[in-house]
Amino acid sequence: MSSSSEETQLREKLRKIEALFAGAGTEGERVAAGAALTRVRARLAALQRSETPVEMQFSLSDQWSRRLFLALCRRYGLEPYRLYRQRLTTVMLKVPKGFVDQVLWPEFEELNAALVQYLNAVTLRVIREEVHGDASEAPEARSTLRP
Image 1 (cartoon, rainbow, N blue to C red):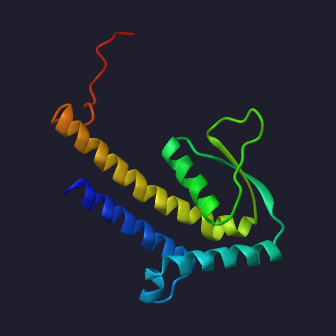
Image 2: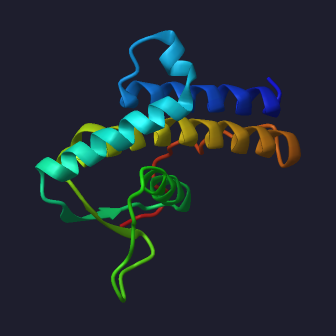
């Protein structure tokens, strides 16, 4: 499978995940990404009126997950930040907890899983093609060191 075909499949999968969390009811709604984004923002606005936003802390161990999470927050009009001296892996957010539980975090997890799967496939393909054909994990062996 070509890399552009893989990327196209990833993009389509990400759009479908977004439509799922936006609450799209029909196929036509799923295609209208702009409408999906509007629905999620409306849902966030409703939760902000009914729930007091709380400061939440997220720890995202790799740069790809962190970048995805930051972009997703910004897409919904949220303003992620870090406190002075916090690690780069930490993201703070003032948001209604219900939005995080019902939309933001579940959507992030699904998008992140799709992204990680894609990045792993691309990485393995490049290693096999450019470094060595066997990119498998090292087999487990008994220790040859004596205590």
